[in-house]
Image (cartoon, rainbow over all chains, first blue to last red; front, side, top):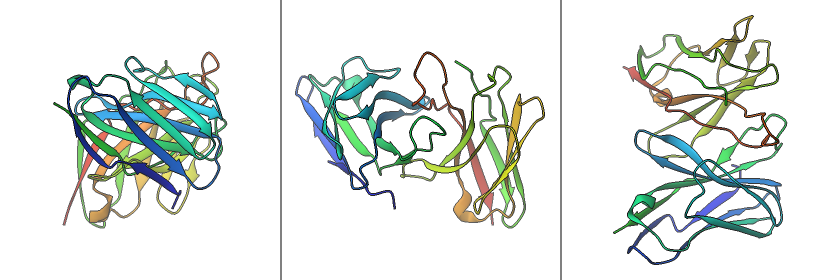
Length: 114
Length: 113
């Protein structure tokens, strides 16, 4: 058990509303990631973090922002949700970071934007 | 970015070995080969990784070609619980982005009883 909790697990919202997804870890690992998964696209990296207040963009970062004010929490925010952001969002941690990079994933957050 | 190519789907019978292939002809010398799997309605799960030598763990074995342009994940005795999408991934080692793993579409493994 990698000690990763995502919340909320399910959310339905309307276009134009802000949404924040939370990823919480209990192991104080440095590296955390947000992915989205859509049919036909596999998993795509949105943003990742390599420390408190240290974040960087992934391949599909447009429309998303992240914050990491403490080690255990990595927040993903959709400032103004669009229907194209309907997806399953996975948070991941990497205990050993960039050297070998094994990731451990949360159970996912299913977001529907109407 | 170095890419991987996997078959879209494969079938196996329970208790038989399964060999899942992956081609990565543009792999660079320092790219690690990772395998993950994703069971239905769950997040991906780490399976195994390697650089040059074959690797074994309690879940599977990873056989890496001598030229590193391909690899094979071996499940020695498939069970129904091994039915999942299997992803072969190269660790992105370009431009300082050492931390991220880029997933493709994977191979859907069906295990028949």
